[in-house]
Length: 315
Image 1 (tube, one colour):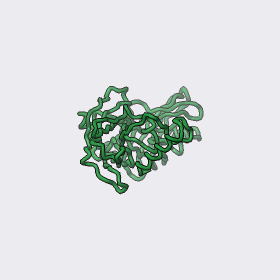
Image 2 (cartoon, helix red, strand yellow):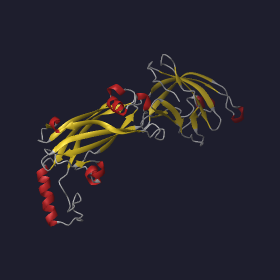
Image 3 (cartoon, one colour):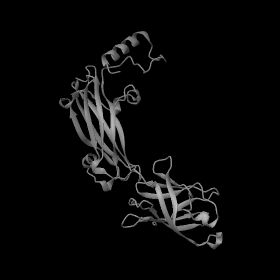
């Protein structure tokens, strides 16, 4: 795979012996093939963390390929755009130049190929687009565009490169890539939960007060989703009122926006009352109000048993 010359020889030999539609070939061959060029992403590390923008970056190891092992490539251009998939595109910013890596900056790696170590910074993207951290949202993404220019002036980019070259594991050609803005969530832990339920005589829901009930907030399989192990929906009040637990609802943390969803075993769905989620000034106490469609509800405060701090949650 590393030896491009051998690969080209194999292709040429295959063309002389096999038709273009041969099902045994690992890639599709075309008689009108010409010498092109592409960059192959070998490794990628890092992330764009919404909560740590200044220290967020992506690092890629890239190798360059053409008919002369990359020697006829003169530049590798990178553009960026911001794609707002959170608020319907209102904050999207059009594609703009980010930077150019000239061939004079290429190095030869241990495998003998011209290569680059490319760093894409979160703040670098914001600066190029003329926006600030206040203009982006967790869950949205930056889209990067990569263009190769050869010494004869020919240009290869996303629009004139076949999908087989970009999607194939054998090539992994780098012409476009999305980098999502992530919001790491780490709310799991042992809690001490206090609650005052809100009476609703119509459904037989009494007003009771609970103090420092030990509950466990466990991470579910989906990122940023949690369940209360002992009582998923009512935060410890059902066991006191009914002697049973509510099963099914979950809590989600989406970039510090807290929500509650799902139905219990009786089909009633749960949510957090709008505007009730807050964290105390010392970050030790989380407050919110839950409610379900049966008419049960409660005002809750929760602390970590070990004294840990909550992030700046809201809804």
